[in-house]
Length: 414
Length: 215
Ligand SMILES: Nc1ncnc2c1ncn2[C@@H]1O[C@H](COP(=O)(O)OP(=O)(O)OP(=O)(O)O)[C@@H](O)[C@H]1O
Ligand SMILES: [Mg+2]
Image 1 (cartoon, rainbow over the protein chains, first blue to last red):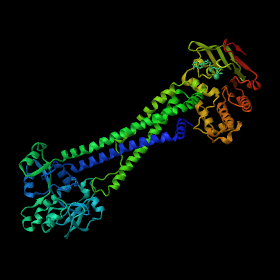
Image 2 (cartoon, protein in one colour; image 1 turned 90 degrees about the vertical axis):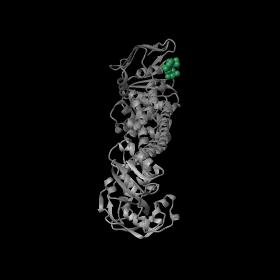
Image 3 (spheres, rainbow over the protein chains, first blue to last red; image 1 turned 30 degrees about the vertical axis):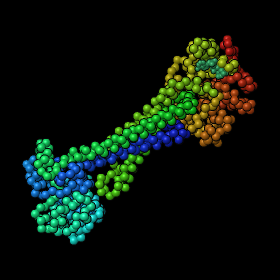
Image 4 (cartoon, rainbow over the protein chains, first blue to last red; image 1 turned 180 degrees about the vertical axis):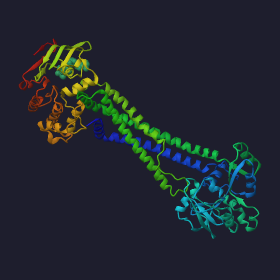
């Protein structure tokens, strides 16, 4: 027998209002937790993928689309650009590193990216098995790709296009010669190969433009439609990921490229910020909704405690007549409000993590941004402070009323 | 021993209690009689340290209740005084046994289920130890309330109108149980129930107007 058992007994005695409180607070906290987890995971992922890429050179079109397609591998590319022209800009003294990318095909939904080993180095990738390609049609696969059956030594054929649809390049077989250890970046979901492989597949292959899922793709493989002969003359890539040698480059280079060439220069940092801003708008609305739920929860504890005071005042007066001090009566009410709020918060945290984990699983095999609820974040400590605030605020008025109540008058009421 | 010294109590301008000096010896069992509004309840609350008199002093044994405050006064009330209310006021969320244990806890005494069960047993209520107050008959609830009052072996037991809503049999039973369970404690029962005189002959009478004490 102590204040905790007294508080617990009273909470059990009034299950309905207490349950209502748990539901309201639990939902509010769950929403905030889920938002926190999702937004940090998305923005963390976006930042890691764009890490060190200062500028992306590609075909004209939407800059966001260019970044999404070549840095995050989410959207379809804006088109292709001549390799010569890309190399011209890459040799600018303000550029430290330039990594060419050539997109166009996929294997079971994983993008096949023609590039150079510099891309591996850029993301600090390590080999779990095998090594980098040294001939066309050899590939290195990311960890998630390997988990989907593309094991070291396996052979596969590419499908045209970047989605799961499209026709097979049946006469060109790729082989896995290396598997990367997980990097936590977009690399985990890519199949990497030499630029030559991509050119070989598309250069030797004849197909009609209507088979492409998109107009952009027609441009994508403009060379291949004309046959192998002039494909050699004008090699094309999709984009070039570039790193500045000097921060000064940011001021002049993108504008120079955009005005003086037929190419487009897009800045990942800017486009990512724009994207997060768009997402942020949605997050803010949800956050406001969660705040409303939490305030409603605080009110529900308050109402539960306060209305219970009408009948509860006799219990509390009896405790006082039995020798319990005013301070302890106040403590009892506070403990009750706090334990309700803490329970609601814990339920909310569990729900929030569970929901994010479920979303991560349903969203599937990590094609895009993979989510997990099985992590804890430092900001969640702030969430743990919430029940203290909610509980204390809710207990304030009832506690004050109990503190001031006249025991003798209460007990002689009939 | 309960002692009042030049005790007067006013609510606002109106003096409702003027008992002067009054002394109730250890182990005395007394009725506190008087018409409605004569201040019986007020006097009990003063004796319990729940109400501070506007004038005079109150002594319980060697302790001056009127000189004590806050938690110290609460502790004395918990350990030395037991109160029975007309409307029992058992705590509905607690079992019968817990209603007795809560008295031990509140007084700052050791919470001892053995002692609590013995007390319930003496009142014939040990079989219902796990029941909730709402499932008890009025007579049973009264026994539990008495168990809660006496479990700490208080020096002073105060009861305010314990019989007013009871039939003859129940009224007599409650009074007898109180006398029996007092076990040497001073017992003061405020009532205007004439039936009580048959059980407890000793009385203090408060008069409505003149507030003269007749022992
Ligand atoms: N808190 C209070 N404030 C103002 N007046 C009060 C208060 N408590 C009691 N009184 C008044 O003091 C007088 C004595 O009240 P008290 O309850 O002590 O009488 P009583 O003898 O117990 O009466 P009853 O037999 O009706 O229970 C009454 O006139 C009552 O109205
Ligand atoms: Mg009265």
